[in-house]
Amino acid sequence: MSDATTAAARRPVDGMRMRRPGLLGLGASRVVYETRIYFRSPDSVFFTFLFPFIMLGIFTAAFGARGNIGEAPDGTGGISVGAYYLPGMLAAGMLLSGVQNLAVDIAGEKGDGTLKRLGGTPLSPLSYFIGKIGMVLVTGTIQAALLMLVARFVLNIDLPTDPDTWLTFAWVFLFGTITCAFLGIALSALPRSGRSATAVVIPIVLILQFISGVYLQFYLLPEWMQNLASAFPLKWMAQGMRAVFLPESFANLEQSGSFDLPLVALNLGIWLVVGLVLSRVTFRWIRKDA
Amino acid sequence: MEMESSSAVVRVRDLHKSYGSFEAVKGINFDIHPGETFALLGPNGAGKSTVIEILEGYRDRSSGEVSVLGADPQRGGLDWKARLGVVLQSTGESGAVTVTEQLSHFAGLYPNPRGVAEVIAAVGLEEKAKTRISRLSGGQRRRVDVALGIIGRPELLFLDEPTTGFDPEARHQFWDLVRRLKAEGTTILLTTHYLDEAAQLGDRAGVINGGRLIDIGAIDEIGGAEARVPLVRWRDAHGVIKEIRTDRPGQVVAELVGAAGAEPVDLEVIRPSLEAVYLGLVRGATDQIRGEEDAGKQSDDRDTATGRVAADELAADETTVTEAHS
Image (cartoon, rainbow over the protein chains, first blue to last red):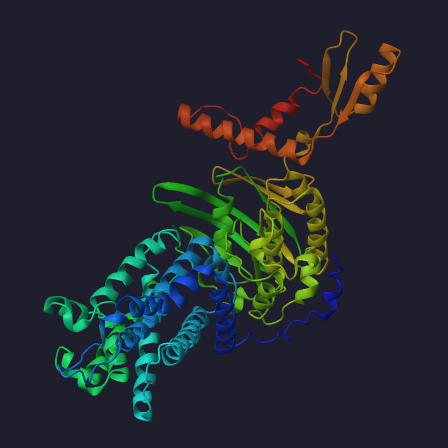
């Protein structure tokens, strides 16, 4: 052990106390810290980060030989299975990075004492939120970028070239990912322990993916299931992504015959507010008197 | 019995805490003064953790007054938290970061932290600085907890059973560390089940049992002078162990030597340790609580204010010779 008393000399006299680090600065330092932990935990890397890649690979391998999707009888206008599933996988990545990742992560931090420890430090919950949302944005962006690189260079899928389309991608991605992050924080209040978190969260996320046009082609689903899915944000994220990556002709396969981007924005906006309010209301460092 | 409380770092008055119909804390008063190390002692379930968590701001009290560093912990803001160091009882974090990464991150939360390398050295983890916390042993992880508690250069440090899982050497290193923190002027609230630790580190102690403070005082005075009467123990000519409780052990030993004309076999003069005094206090208080519960209101005229009953009984007959079976 070294001599800690030398530190006494450096102790500032009263009234000279330095200022606490700012909310945003701490938030940024949390983003770095959280992202490092994310990539070091095998669970999050496999079930959140790599999952869309695995599913895209499986769909391409399983159905690729059946020919293109959406072909006219004369054999024109179709796209490959991989190209059809890419927007769904991007939407799934946003959902997993936000909702599944944060809900399981934060419920676990509640259970293992991480939040209790943080609650005893001068860290603002706001900086903590910034850290979580920033981590979701960083990991989600890397995930989406890699997915598109794999699509382009491994599966030979043509990506959009029009700048306006990429602008649409940017807002759907940012809006959707932030909404999912808040919904993940809110959902973390539901599991009663860190250990039960995956059992509570994964079925919710999985069912949403099946009914929202991620795994199953949305236009093939019965109308009641399409209507049910419309009550949740994933359907709108997937629709927004289809607007970016599918040819204009595929708009006919949508429920209303159009990609309805304003409706996508409206629904994500509503869910963002819901997520914000629920996060704010339910989040506690610890449950007092539990 | 207490100093004027305006200068107190921690001030607790008539503190009550109930969980539903269970009353965990039943009216506790104490002060902790600047620079003091105060040991809060008591058996499991006595209410120690409830009290310490109320002071840390983790729990809300049912009634009473509490002031910690001049603030009500229920309303303590971030600036208030920046002046505290908290070492919680148990942790189970996943530990995907290294010791250095964890301490650097936490140092960044405070306005005027200690140096990371200096703190790692102070808890004796230099060789594990680049190791992930998940790969440390239980005792080593506990040292990380202690390091995180002091990284922010706290004015008031809460140590809730800090040395659980430490080997004896680590415990002595930890004691040295606490003495250095004390020398720097840190006020410390310590709970521990190791009474030798409380005796080594504490200036004063409070003993909690059944939600009540049954005694409080300087560490070498707690339990009263009677509880500290020395014990002379030896084996007589028939091989039977004898004990005498006396204020004059030297005289007793001299008489023994004179009577036997030889060195007494297995002779010991025992001054009751803090542990013995503590056990006397707690046993007395527990008997009393049980008595109250069993017989409703006993018309016993023992002083019900303290748990000194057992200690008094032990010391009542100064020259009682007891035969103990060996």
